[in-house]
Image 1: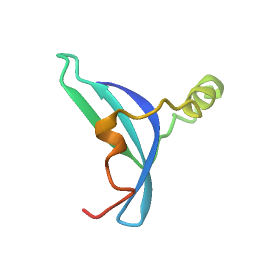
Image 2 (image 1 turned 45 degrees about the vertical axis):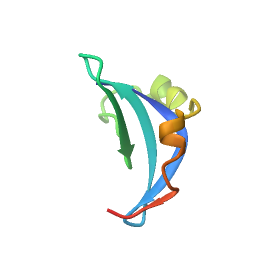
Image 3 (image 1 turned 135 degrees about the vertical axis):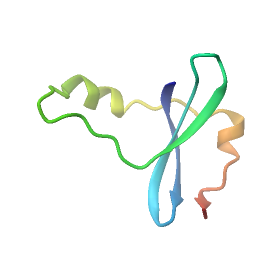
Length: 71
């Protein structure tokens, strides 16, 4: 999958999660609820940290997801 961070966040079981949108290699649209992202300690994460703060507007489908979700 290739996913992009959106500006939309929700709470899942009391934990904040950012919604990322993208698609699989075969083109199937997906959205992911990401609560944590980490980089291996031996890697320079300077560029990753810059990219992590960039967010695009969510699609209409994702924007309609309630801010508080219960799983």
